[in-house]
Length: 114
Length: 117
Image 1: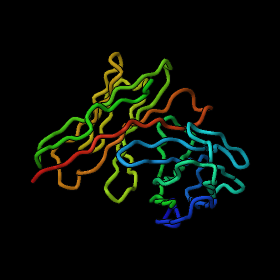
Image 2: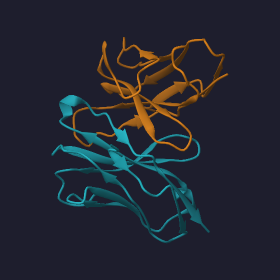
Image 3: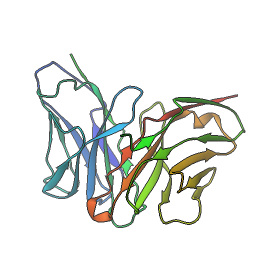
Image 4: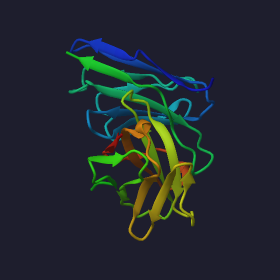
């Protein structure tokens, strides 16, 4: 079955620690994305990558970092510089061949930092 | 300025009736696309329907249809014959510009839909 996996589903960290969220896709998509969702709000773009070894900042990149060393993988690191990291994080991927190519989402990771 | 505006924080609909979820957008691009996603309480995002700015016909996918009014910059989602399983958060999103800029989306704040039996 093709899809996107994110692990773990729930993650707890102490303030001041960096934490890495994993995202893997086997859909052979070129583009991958990371979004953050706060309670009762929409999704905000953190980073995106259209091709291996290249990525761009989204609207709220401060305090986050990413890498794209393989087509299938796009891990997100939440650094200690992120002032309010507790949120629901969603990874997505898409083809970029047609205008109507939708983004496919993973199940998300709920990060709690105390 | 908000790119995507969903003015209805919450909506109720009776089972088997139709419901319209509003979405207005702001862009100066001629080429753009509008997407609707459903997010159940589990958190996953489920793609529902797409409308391109150059599409002359309103998009339809099963019980979902899009009321696309380009001059008004609105792309309202219509769900016909509501079911209890339609209870979820619904997001409108927009992709702007040519494909070379990627497929990144801007999302609205969402509308919570509750279907009553």
